[in-house]
Amino acid sequence: MGNIANISSQFGYFIGTYPLQTIGVVLLLCFSILVSFIFHPPIIETDIRHGFVHRNSRSVLEFQRFAEFYNSSWTDIEMMVVMIQPKYPNDKVLQITPQLCDQIKQLELHIQSFEVPNSVKPIKYNEFHIPGGNVNYFFDAFKFGYDLITRNNKTDGSVMLTYPQGSIFGHHVSLASHFFGVKLIENYTEKGLPTAMESAATISLFFMVKAHGILQKYRLRQWQLALNELSETGNYSDLFVFYIYGDQIANAEMERGNLKSLKLFVIGAFIMIVYIASILRTFSIKSKILLTLASILSPLLATIVSFALTQWFKISITSITGFIPLLMIGIGVDDAFLLIHAWQNCSSISDKRNRMANVITAAGPSISITTITNILAFAVGAITASPTMSSFCSCMLIAIALDYVLELTIFAPVLALTTNFERDDHPEKRQSFWFMKANFDPSRTFSSDSKLITCVEIINSIYHEYLEKKRKRSGSHNISFTYQYVPEFLTSKFLADKNVLHYHIIDRHAFSYR
Image (cartoon, rainbow, N blue to C red):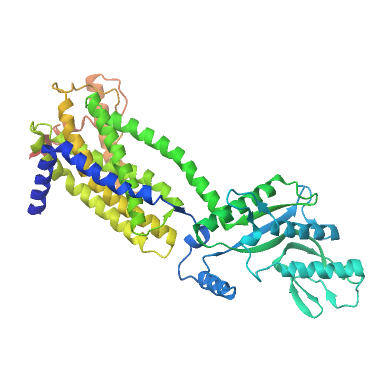
């Protein structure tokens, strides 16, 4: 421990001797790292479905086998779902009619031919289509059988459109994968109806697409977002509205939500600045400005540099890393307060070099311990199975380590520079208008079912009797209960012959006597 204290003292003495040089060297190193952003701009990767799932979970293994069947990588295949519901709120269900089936089929064909203009080349569905990847064959089979019965009057029993499973020419057709909330009709064949389904609350279509690499996934996002805008108009059909859920739409919504957090970041930073300025009321105006900026900018610089280092280490920068600046401001300002508190406690030391040596020696262990515990906590998260959380914790781990360095090499030197603006006069002590009324109740010390409650009640009754006698003797009309008469009570005739231990605190030293 002596060696650590000696190193801390020497480091603080060095900072107090060369504050500007220390800040300059550290900023030069940080900006040299940030130059990498020019050659390798940061790419934010957002993947809700793959990012928040266990690497070795059953769903991942199942999807890998599914992708292998189509000779594709499981990270490239995505599913897009189109959910169809009644257009008007009063219509709770979709009536199964030939017109409805025709319009749903037209919607399927429209999606497959949907095209989005682009400066490079138009974005089409065929760009992402997987050969043999039509997963709407059960709905297509249902419509085929439905048309045979309704339009060709095929009633020989070779087409049975029952629910949840039908049969067409001896082939089983699972209708439960497309029709949900179905209302059935009993004995539909006797009534001459084509299907046992009278209505459905929701009808779904599925599209399997493939996008490899960041650029193609971005094009897929543009295509899905444009298709989503079409669905939001609600004017495609007079029978239904449709909603689209796709991985890229979900990723875009998550990024949009994280961008909204920037507003909270600005508000939080403003509140933090006001709070820091109020804490630094004993400092001069110039010192307040320097310390406030340094306490905020140090953790922010650590965050930005950590983003550059994560790219060097091939760690993905995900959308949830946008919360790191909010967390880092709290951690960085906490370390800054520890240094400020130690600096004020050493105000009697006139030489700033010796003063900074004492500050680092006093506050260094606290900052080091909190930094180590935070690093260990996020290190555990960095080795978790979820890729998104792992990258977030890894980036946070690097940011905390950098903030520890910058607090000691940027904020501490700035603290040493404030000696040039310190006031010569000591701040005048003022009486505060804030006070707290003493309202101690001994019975609240113990639980309500404690046996000591009875003892406390007995003592209170005795004390109340003594207090009444004291009021009558002094003529006081104060009927409020207080414990300020306890010292006099201990020296009264009731306890004058008893051995009572008196306890006083004088100049932070305790003295006791009988």
